[in-house]
Length: 194
Image (cartoon, rainbow, N blue to C red; front, side, top):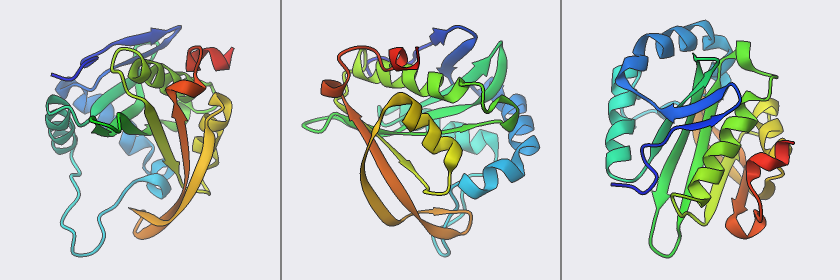
């Protein structure tokens, strides 16, 4: 069992909780309504790499299996009890690294309200606290101004650039790399939003 998983994190009207199999309808409806909004940022499978899990059931099953193995933490994001998006902690590495990466998406109707900066901050604080990680990384396409705004609001520094980093929307895409460590957070990351 992974320390700090499962977890329910709450701040104001934003709740970050484990993704559940029962989220299927809400997840599908939100993704369907926001297909055009999310398409430029969604990972895709490169030719010859197999088929990407497309249904909620496939995605949830894979993520929950990784969570049981201690390699991921798939969180649902709710606003006032409504499913609004997802924050997923991926690639959890223990040993001498104590590292993870975070990816996130949000329905367009919730954008611009500070929801995702709050959710990401709560997750980072949880990872540095109860989970005991040392470093968290967020990789973002240079064109994704909404995601870049999240790391900007949280004061997470840019540490590098990765050309052709991830296959997204049908092609290999460059990413800017942002990271934060425990040493850079003498107080909660959530406090940076005050």
